[in-house]
Image: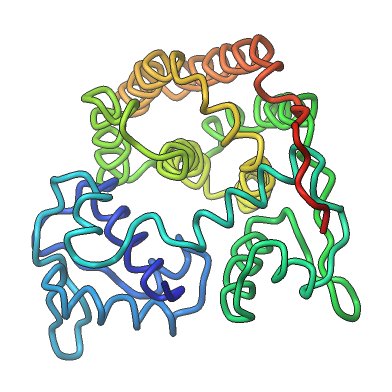
Length: 308
């Protein structure tokens, strides 16, 4: 599967998550910003979805939703030939799990990675590019890659939540705070989707991204670039342990209800109350994560796979 097809699937997921109706505009730059890639592969993915009938194209205006995305996105992706569970996604999660288990060295060469995961050079560049964009690996001088040690322990995830606890509620109290009604409605629709069954059926990627978009949307409405940049950076590097924490989804119903309550308060202009509710939500999440450190901890493996 090519990186472009993977992006096409992500765009379908975005349409579904945001509840975009037929006729909604999909600006290429907005998609590039949200998916953290350049516009060139985005344009190729948009063209692919246009050929599949999901999008329509209007001369000099761009792409628009042509088909309502109401079914599960993995089913629609399979139907369209986008292959939701592609080799790159599978390898991405294998690398993450190997790293958390301590089976993958902190510094590796591309030759070692290609051999270990049986990838072509193009496939390896695609999966390492995603990992680098998320902030948990970077290219070393010369020929190789180094993985960040920042987010590999339960304590690291707890520390990231304590940072967010200090920042996110304060963002809601910024002068001139304004959450666009359309963004608020999109956030609410995402929570209702989860309560309607998405908690059980969504992938780890989808669950993580929905949570990230909720919290980043609230912080972005502050207009304070320092809050926004810090929270985005934290969200990128905490992804590794966030995936593992999703093995226990019992707490997600409470999360959704708390998110909806915060949105209701913001809609009413009660920012001080919303800030306090957000603080209580993050504190509750912090406490819940503290109770599942056994899931987050590095697990022993037997037998051990060959090291890179």
